[in-house]
Image (tube, rainbow, N blue to C red):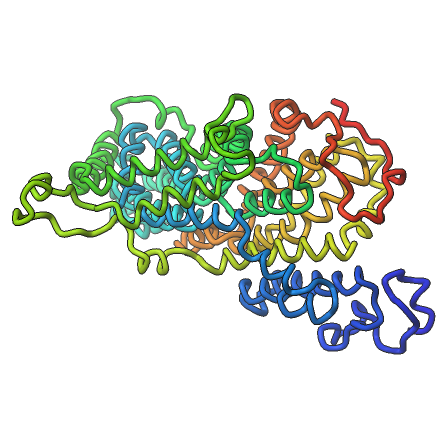
Length: 575
């Protein structure tokens, strides 16, 4: 294209080659040597975004592209690219995954789930709440996928006790007339007419759907409450350390104080919505009345009790993992919670991070015994002793830890580093200047809504990797505290509720065969709206004061030194 340079400032000179984005072979014939640094980096970002969204390559393989493309294209030297793949943020994530492996190894997660269900009871509305509370709590520490995969079989067993066989329910729901009385009325009570049986079966099928759909949604919501709960949270803290090294506001404790109340609020309104939509709030199911369902509910309660009894008393291994899990959470929370002095003051300032804390705890798991050692052996070496088996083996960790996600995190950090060093983030931010006229509270809603919609079609990790650098530069350009835009974007990318392909938990629930796409779209659309409202509420209330979001901080310098501060328009957060 002749005269292309006036159209795009990233093109270094006129060229007859097809332009990068206009040719169908843009992957094969890019203008690699006719672009400025920003253009070269933009090519890599678009290429990786394309591969991440289409999954033409495995996500982890795409994440490694900066290692070969940034040095060969002259964007960044390899000595700056490669270290991005194992920053301290990756160690924090790894420690969370290893702790989750220990919890799963000894079945502690199943004990927690059944105990919660015993407490809440078997009325459908309360069971849905119990399922959501359990799923959200477990996904704060385990992966959302593992939580959903564990909870769904438990839910199905309880549902079969309450309502009987799913196929029988479906058959009864289709019956319109049954003159010969051949209805299969398992768990449907004593209904006088086929019409009553059909309505009752339809109602029970709705409740069944509510059970199945609440678990993946609660797992996605729960993962936002801790830094280690989901990958986007760690990408936020990693990119904050890269862009704004002087900012120390985000750590495990401060994030938990902000995100946990948000999780509770969203979980409650989500429970109200799902229970309302799928019949769980029917008063006959919420009030303890002696009706035709009493026998079914007693049987469901018996199933829960029986499964819990099969676990037996808490053994030494479970107790040990519980202790280290609680210690893991307490130490991370109290290291530097900001509102009080943390235990990190006993060490040199800046030396001990959340990653150090996590690795210390998980290292103990590899040598701490899983069986109570005999004290007699200490006094008599010839005395019998229990065989030594540690709480966790490296072989188990290799099998359970999703190493591809660690590479994905590293790829995100490498991409962010390239955007910063090449000036691409600053260039994009300069073209977003018109957004300075949008009130910041409205901007938060728009950013959260956009990210929540985009992540319906791409993985949440890839989504936040692509957009977080742009959002950070936007905040600097419009002179708003970067956390005011970056936190809602990070949380919003976990709110993927509308499609089965949006997240692995959604896919697992959809694979049960009872949910349809329209069920997830209908439920998920309102869930997205509720999530956006809850995030906006959190950012403009306690988040505003926790992170001092109403002022532009000194640590928020431009990402690229070539961007003069005089070009930054003032944009104060006003409520």
